[in-house]
Image (cartoon, rainbow, N blue to C red):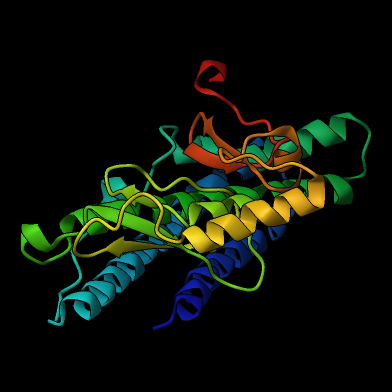
Length: 266
């Protein structure tokens, strides 16, 4: 399976979940507190099911990559639910009540019901997207740590594999580096990069120096400046900020103007 094929499977699973949740949300007929509780009670098991499917997909992909690297058949590792579901530290029923809070807020501002419902639906899709993205990150880490090979053959490092013709600038920079398995894969919403374990010897911190140089050269050509840490003002204006902490989702790759709820806000 190519990284593009794997990304398509991940995207398909995410879109199926979002479509199902939006259909349920729009079918309620009323969006008061009783309907919000009814929706959350149905939505959370749907999300958990999709997260478990994501875990199985990641485990199978990890085994496939291990088999190709080691030249032996590898069985997908079993992943426990605690690395797949309820990763925000907030009950799912509260999380999936939030689209209704968005509806109430915009109705209170005088917007029409249709417009307020669309805003709620947009927030619902964003929540589901983030939940499956977070599951992917945690599952990838757990699968690399538990892949069914001798402990000495398990990867100690991973790399970010770019997918598609367009990638944010920071993902391109990140793809030139290797990271330790114990370091959680940072995410940003909608990212389709693949996490791939590095089997064998440590390749060193920079694994693609030529691409790294091209990225910095391109940034300097576009902005007149570049920065090796990818944090200079001009650099951030065309890429994304390095890592910012989200109160529930953990480390994320964030665009410069994104403002996430931090631990102190909860």
